[in-house]
Structure formats: structure tokens, C-alpha cells
Image (cartoon, rainbow over all chains, first blue to last red; front, side):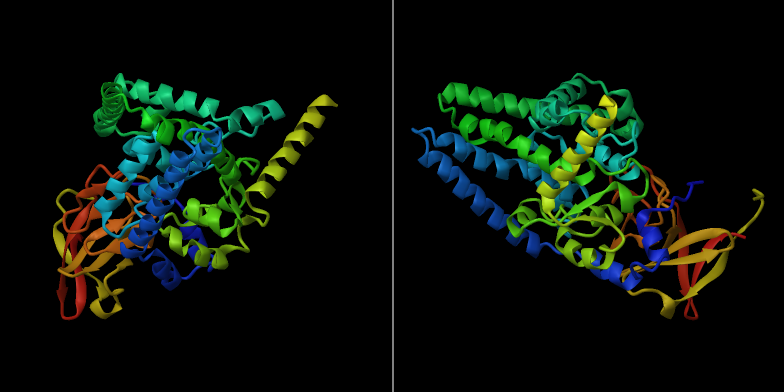
Length: 316
Length: 109
């Protein structure tokens, strides 16, 4: 028989932080708001792509590609929301949009889904949370992580490992056996699609996608690393959701780009709540979670403060 | 539980007490059950998700699909079939009916 576990949500309901009626209203989903939001998203992408085209013959192409990259890497936020089936009420639309986003940022959707589920089970627990970003031990480590070099190294190793029909020991823990073949197939398909795109570019002699997509993606990823660090890094490595996760109050453009995932503690409390209801859930839970009022930069100031404190303690 | 025990109908909750178009938690002895009010009638299953053990009664329910609140794995409540990862095994469902305004579930006595 399945063993019952106490989720943060069960606890929040039991402690009266949230009523069942409120929970039901927060969880409601629909397709229309996200389709509208995606239309705005495509418009923004069109604008940033146009900026790259306009800057083609000048040095300005580099800042233009960086801006394009910032938008591109935030396809992670859409994919993440799709993993939770909270973007659309129609379930297959979440799968479709999640797959497309995964293709843009080189992150197979099915694999990410399993990995992310495990992250929600073992949030911020050393040795168990597969997405845990360790607290850097030095400024060098901090900057190295933000460079995204270790991230890409890990991702490329991962996708080639899966394409060659292998899973790491950690992955074997969270991917059920019946899904192994599908994970291998996804990685092969993904590499196959990228291969075809490159062959098509070589045949036609038009390498535009390298400048509109590939280089911007790598230029933008440090921004995503900077954002991802603010969710848990520097918070205690304990199971209590009220402690191990940080909510960052950010400006409207950042919140739009990350699909309100700055309300990260609220998301971990009730992952079934769609992005658009997270600000309302924040109002209910804000006194029970860790909130960083100064946003992403405030979170990084805190991380760096802790980092120097540790370095000083080691030096003494 | 003895193998010879026969299945029989048990009253679990009044029909009017069910949450409309949603999932309602009930207890029958030591068993925690989820009762679903759907467009095609009332269905029943074990309340705990067979993937991670979270309480399905706190999850999102839409039509005939119940979604686990922890990982959003989902099941069709009519036959227990998994419809979204990480749910891969069917959930345990029970025959159910409404008799004289009372929801009844058929399981071993």
C-alpha cells in the first residue's frame, strides 16, 4: 500500500494558512489567458529578433543578441510551467508548448519533468535534490556558476548520455523503468533535429539561426543562472518549505519574463496553482515564507554576504 | 484481510455533501477514499497517489482527470488509467453508485 506523505500543501491546509475554497479558486485553469500571453511573448521575440537583424553589420549585434538571449532563456520559465500543467487547461497544449520550449533551450521535456518532480519531492536536500545548486564556496565558484559553463557542460553530457542509452545513478532513481526508452528516444530525436537544422543551414549557406538563436542562447544563459540561483541558493538545506525557498519581489518586466516564478516559495507550496494566481497566493502565504523584498539583486547580495562570511570563517 | 471476505456496498457520503464537480475526501474504516463528482456520475478511488503518496483530494480536478498536488501526475478517475507522468501505474478505483441520495462504494467488508 502507498505510504502517505505530508506535503507542504496538506500542512498549509491543516494549519489554516489556506482554506480549501481558496485553494480551489487558485487552482482554476483556462487556455485563453495563456494564449494571449504567448501572443505577447511572440511579439517580444519578433521585436528582439528585429533588433538583431537591424544591428547585423555593426558591433551592436552583440548587445542585440544578448537581449534576444535573455528572452530565449526564459523559455525555461514557460517549459517549467508546462511541466506542472498549469499554463493551459487543455493538458496536451502544455505538452506541446513544453516540447517546443525544450527544443529552443536544449532541455528534453519528458526528462525535465521527471527531474523536476524529484526536485519538488526533495527540495534543497543535499544529495537528494537533483536540481540543487550548491552554495558557492568562493567568489570564483560563484562567478563560474553564473558563466553557465558548468550548466552547459552538464546539459550536453546529459543529453549525449541519454542518446547513447544510459542514465546516471541519480537519474535511475527518479525515472521509472517503463520510461527509460522514451527518455533515450527523446534525446536522440532532439539531437537529430539539431543535426538536421545544421545540415539545412550548411546546404543553404544561410547561417542566420546561429546568430538569431544559438549565440543569443549561450549569451543569455548566465542571466538564467543568475535568476535560478535566487530560488534556493543561500537558503537552509532543510526540508521545511518555509525556510528552504526564497520568493523574490521583482519588477513587472522580470515577473512577465519568468511567468511569476519569482513567487517561488508559493509555487513550491502549491505547485498546482497556475502562474497567474501566484501573486494572489502570495498575499495568503507571505507571512509564512521567506520573502526577499529587493528581488534578484537582493537575493544575490544575500548570497554574496553569506559567501564572504564563510570565506572569513574558513580563513580564521 | 481474509481472501474469503466478500465485496459489498458501503455508504460513504451523502450525495448533497459532495463538492460539485470536484473531489471529496471520505474515510471508511482505516481507508482514505477520494470520491469524484463528474459530468458522467460519481467515481471512487484510493485517496493517496500511487507515485509519491500525496493526497489526491488536495489536487486539481477537471472533468474526469484528477491531478496529484505534489507532482501533477494525473489519472482518469473512470478506470484509474494514468494520463500524465510521473504517474505510470493505474490507480486503484472502486465501483460506486448512488442509492437513496447516498454515495456507495463497493469494497471488501
